[in-house]
Length: 163
Image 1: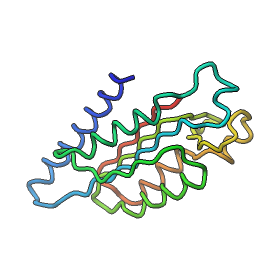
Image 2: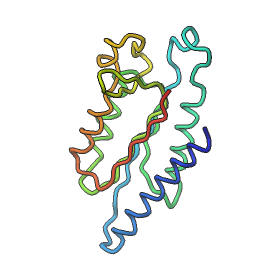
Image 3: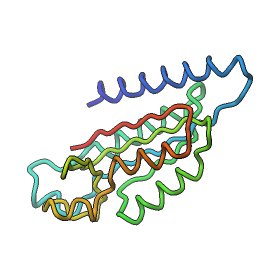
Image 4: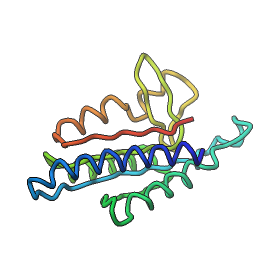
């Protein structure tokens, strides 16, 4: 798990560095905004799974800390164990911060499901065990990416560490 997290962080730093050097010639500061979500406190974890998510929040927090370090320079919002309403609220805040030419990064650690060829991230209050409920309770990855694209960021990074 830690190796995967380090690989993700390395990729993010490489993209951010490339973007920084490309824009350094223009002397334009580039806003770097990150939304880091770690969901592990799902109410039915213990009853339905042999091994509940233990590292989702810990890994998300580690990534958030690394992105805040000097030299990486992201404005990071780290949140954990979000309900459906909480996820919507945090994504709305994230979108409001994105501007044309900014760098936007979203990381989600927790449960995700696929239904009808769509991927969904699952909030902690989501009913995720019936396919008919996935679209109603989960957050569509495609919608999230489309909403982020509408703000015309310079670079977009989406990382999912989902079970």
